[in-house]
Length: 239
Image 1 (cartoon, rainbow, N blue to C red):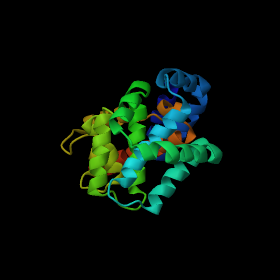
Image 2 (image 1 turned 90 degrees about the vertical axis):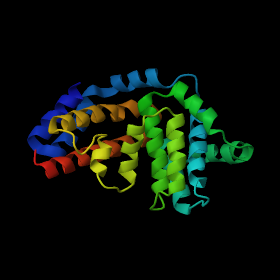
Image 3 (image 1 turned 180 degrees about the horizontal axis):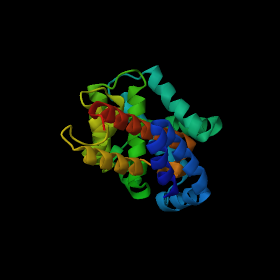
């Protein structure tokens, strides 16, 4: 709770920079207790290697979705895995995947069932965010990639509103800021403020602490996108 009090206070007095400062200061105050709490709650009965291999399998489905395997997308995945798990562990994961799983075929249904059983909702949101990052790595999210991402999002039991929110962070569209906040343009100022607060809690980076620093960093970037969308709407409306 202390983190969000500091975020609100920081935003009240110093706007967006103050909110960010409050967020990171609050994180230091909350310390390792919340990290251990999320570790206990979110991953059950799955080894780190199994998680990484299945995540890599989903990544491969997105990379192949448009029929073209781009260097930018491959580099994005490699960079992400190295950042999250270290070079040696990432290389081992890639080797096991290429030698075994990739040759046998990949079942998105089986992977989604596994992830649904061992990951909480916020962690599954982060998986889709990661997959969108892959699709965007070559500069464009194609229609076939969007179709695949929507399918995976549905299998991971994510709401359409959450899918559209993450999509708006990667695909430019009219009213994108409102889509990120999961509201209509006709929403009242109070509803916009409430939606912003609710999303900030839902996408709290602490909720993916158990997945590693790379995922926390990505969640922080998503949190910033939400902040920026809110700032854009505030500027347009003047409240």
